[in-house]
Image (cartoon, rainbow, N blue to C red; front, side, top):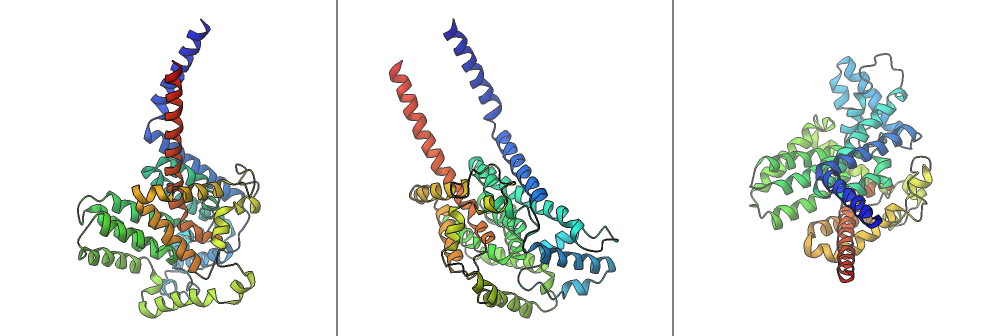
Length: 374
């Protein structure tokens, strides 16, 4: 009798899991809710970070000038050479309705929530392609931290993923997904230049996977360029000079005093990826990560490394994404932790592939043992 009852309970549990948890949409929705919850919690709990005052002061100045209708002052704003102004223009929208605001502090949380929304959308895109990878990305601590602050990261991260994945969805040359991908690539560059290495993966997909005609690249990069210019008002009056100043600023900054004083080694991105430093910086926010050294982030990186031989045969684009992104990070002179976000989605996809293969192996062994016993 007890055996029959146990079988009934197990059968009911299996039915419930298959009925409600096997739905791909339900799983993706749960991942998106988890991602937004963690980012919202982080946005509320984290103290003001290093670059947020600078970005928010620019947003406050933008809001004042937009309120006066002084668009030329927005276009010629002098202190946006390092990164394009689009994310800070979005932050300024949280200040614009309040004509009594005397500074940016009251708009910090709403601006952080803008980042949290785009960070959640980035997780959603990855979850559509691979729900398990989306789940890993939802909890990766650097990803949560830097897409929950008033930083430049969340918008270009989302746009770069949209550029790649919509091209994957493309079925015929110059269909709607082709054009959406092109526009998203332009938005990526208009958000932050350091996310543009995704173009290496896009070219691989375009040429080797899609086998689209090379002449269509003119249309693709043409629309991307128009989108970049349209969303980057800092370039409107003198595009060539302003773009040159922006790019050269990065190279000069990498050789500057602040970077030299910090003294990060050339392999610092590997250290960021192997440890959950945000756990140390914000212990009350990242309560789900046990320690800095034994971390979800490090585990994701290790699993991704183990998956590379498998992916080279099955999903070569992910390997190219990881390798090209890591080469960029190792060669780029500035080693701030937020830069590693350009490879984290690829690492999550690789780690997911390894975990799925491992689970299939375990289930096949478990099933074989069960059959032999019966």
